[in-house]
Amino acid sequence: MKLERWQVIAAGICSLILTVGLARFSYTPLLPIMRDQAGLSAFDGGWLATVNYIGYISGALLASTLSNLDYKYLLYRFGLIVAVISTIGMGLTTDVNLWVFLRFISGVSSTAGMLIASGLIMNWLARQNLKTELGLHFAGAGMGLVLSGLAVMAMVDHLAWDQQWWVLGVVGILFFVPAWIWMPKPAKAGSAEAQVADVAPPSAKWMRLMLGAYFCAGFGYVISATFIVAIAETLPELQGKGPWVWVVVGLAAIPSSFVWDRVARVTGVFEALVLAYLLQIISIVMAALIDGYWANMISAVLFGGTFAGIVNLTLSIAGRQFPANPSKAMARMTLSYGVSQIAAPALAGLIAERTGTYRGSLYLAAALMVAGVFMVWQLKKQTEA
View 1 (cartoon, rainbow, N blue to C red):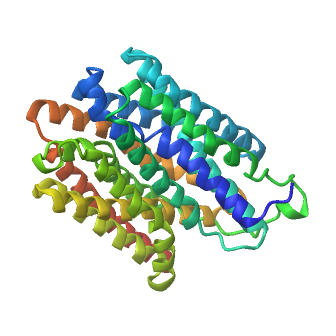
View 2 (cartoon, rainbow, N blue to C red):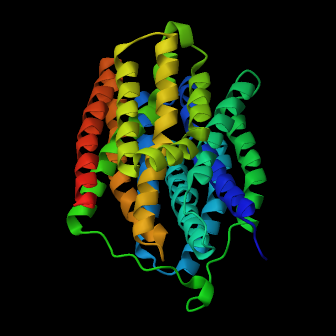
């Protein structure tokens, strides 16, 4: 089947809505509800988030070992199926051990949209001699966050926590279909269509700097992404309205990757990446220092407007260095991004349980993001040398 560009991008968007917005991050607005209705402790809540990231890293590790694009295409489709099953399954049990398993496989499935789909789309764009920009594709992550947040808000007064998981799983099937049928199959090896221009690989020092910077970004991202709703719910002005903060994050994220592509064209990609890091640092510090409705909403806008842009810019940089198999390079980057995410949610949950606040984790996240800024700047110097 001959595919148009809009169909391929739509497949990627739908894959992100399903695997990231619904299967992975519906947990964020549902976390306070599960704590109230299902007896989920703060520590277990953080542990489930950690297991989800372990699953994501496991999926990224698997993707990084696969050079055959046909195998990655099969893994992509498998991830779509697992995303639906793991979402519905969360509402079928109250066993923490089963929740751990389901959050793990949900994390694995999210690599289908975030990594493998990104690589397949970038490879297809390169083969069609089109610009290898992923801003529109990554808009799907923001759309998924908005959808999960709005869905939970619409259901919270009418359905129990488990029924909300079932509904989200059924909604996911609607996005499963286009994500399945419109994602292009890799071109056959050796065919004229499979050929892309060779690019000299980056130096080992360049890769170390990029991996280090993305590690810092991962820590900063995961603390906010996992607990932003729970933090909002601790404020008197936002009690019962925490999911609105998640919706604001998603609304800001929808255009952000596209906008950051445009910013990078004007300033340069590394300058744009530094700016995105700095704005995310401001969002984290605001959440830690300032209580109140507007401070948290501004923090949510800044966070939503930067996290997808950081992912987009970083993975695009990595993918362009390896155009023949960009998803393998993206997987290496994601391993670094994800290593920091394994311990961070559990650490934040433990700190919250013992101190009654997430502030300590937010300060640590901001400090690591500052270190990431310096690494990106050094990366720029290495590239220009």
